[in-house]
Image (cartoon, rainbow, N blue to C red; front, side):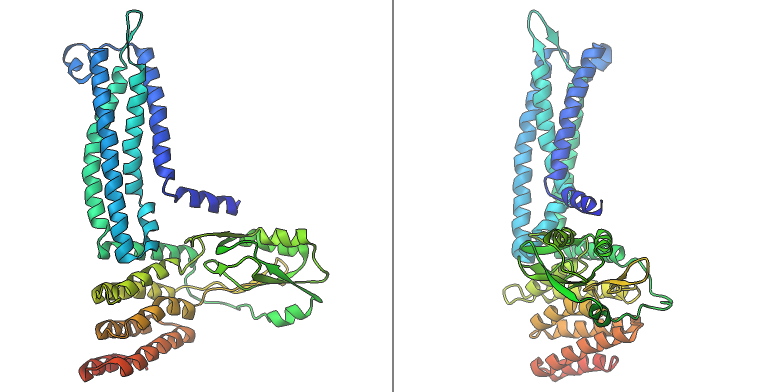
Length: 433
């Protein structure tokens, strides 16, 4: 069931899902309103007649004009979208193009214009003006007219949205929001009284199983999703111990050792296939279980901003500020345990899990390396360490922050040409060490 939910979530996030749904809705509305017009036989009289077509020729003229206008504007919308995608790809990186494709406003606008064009064609085909039959779908034409007016307003909203969505601050804030929502979903539990945490020894558990087998990866691509509930059920049913070597977000090659299975007797290939089926892969990374996905997007923006061709340290500083906010949240949450036990308390899976130290590495290592020639960014990076130090609770968190502060300090000692810049950074470094 969880795998189906994952696939459904991925389907909804594809670029074409919303436009196709809106087009399908437009087709249904066309048939439904024409059917209603056929049943009602409504003929507008008096002042009401000004808002409805008075003849089949008038209905044809309105529908033809709207259809021609909508397909023309749809082409303009597609052109504007492609220009925005090109600018975003050049400035912020090609991997961020996916974020623009996910944008619901862009998807809705594209779908709405094409949908209204198809709607007009269907309704236009029902208008009859022959000696044997006359039919004017007055409500259907009136609805097309109202939607044409609404689409003009939607075009204005779309142009404003595109102009805003390619700004660096907007993109960074959007990614930061996605990152925070992703972290809140993946790390929902606040840190508190841990009680009696598991103190299990995987090496000792492995020693109780005489047979060890490699579980090889069956695909080339990124590990996108692990159905953990079904995996633990299969492991318990086979009565084995599973040691995982990778987590969602890792790039795997077909034949690479995905995990090691420890069993009392050698497993058949069918049993190994049941285990493999719980690991889903694809050509791109997804945020479903990959907490570092949005972090790497933010880091890519900072790295491009620090490149000699762009040289935009303020964008990199903005990325550091937003990453600091997300990591401050991580100081207050409980990271998942690598131990997965069955109902009897036996260790069944030893997983590769995220740690605070690993999240710090993902967020700041690349930025520090690219910022070696930018004192302003390194000073801001040290300020981020000072801020995170105020939120740190555990010894592991404090050690990770001190490690990154020391690496930043060592880099600055080698790179800074101005002594005052080094003194400014040292002043901040001393607040940590």
